[in-house]
Amino acid sequence: MALVLSVTSATSVVGVDVSNWSGDVDWESAAGSGAAFAYVQATEGANYVNPRFAAQFNGAGAAGLIRGAYHFAQPHESTGAKQADYFVAHGGRWTNDGTTLPGVLDLEDNPYKAKNGKDSCYGLTQDEEVAWITDFTRRYRARTGRDAIIYTTTSWWQTCTGDSKAFGHNPLWLASWAAKPGTLPASWKRYTFWQSTDKGPIVGGQNAFNGTASQLRALASPPGKVVFAAKVAGRTKYTLLVGNSGKNPLTKVKVTGKSFGGLKFAKVGRYCKASGTAVVCTIPTLKAGTYVTLKFLARPTGHGPYGIRFAAPGAKVTVKAR
Image (cartoon, rainbow, N blue to C red; front, side, top):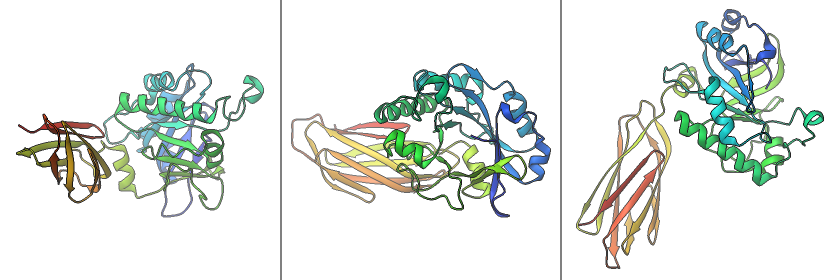
């Protein structure tokens, strides 16, 4: 990841990313040139900390930029969970202050091939690479409550993960040095950040946030939070209230349900599809402070006790018939 100031257009929400190699950054100048956000390298692998991290991170904040930290992955050195822990311990934690962006996992071509003798994928197979990324992102979410942003190129992703489709819940920072973003890695239908060159007119390349300034601030704010309330009438009528107790809207909220005791789904309401003892519901949008009512009609076929276990990211509830 190169030192970057994004100046893609007069209407873009643009920013910078820096590392120790960037030296002392004139943050007031960056802000004056239109930078709205900054990402600062915190760590690399499991044994390197940017010695300028505190000065760069705090300097960006003092200049009024929304900022975050990034970790340069070395998948061959240690587990994803270990590197996530190292990242969080040395600057990568997320703070609920409205000005800290989620951390970034920087995945790109191995720059140390001559030194470590590994290929572009750090000597990992595609399955091993996917497992490593899963290990990192799960641990980062467990430690911070946020989904790590993934910085990568389409070429690296296709070559090293087999174009995995498993990480759509992690925002994408696309590195594509061209006039247009081009084809995205298979996990994503849209990018959140785009680095269009590695060299720019002021401090590096060009980077842009794919949204408005208010949406960038929302990314730095606490995410929405799914909450459940459930009830049952008799043994056949089940109702689930799915609410958002957070401060920001949620999109594509996936709710799964699994019945037990010989209970089978007979009819389901809007947003839901059922088959036998399983149901999946996808709520397109759930605004902050609102809830959606999901209704299910079930048919007892066994001896009970009957009920349904519902789950969504960050929420679980079991409702039992009496």
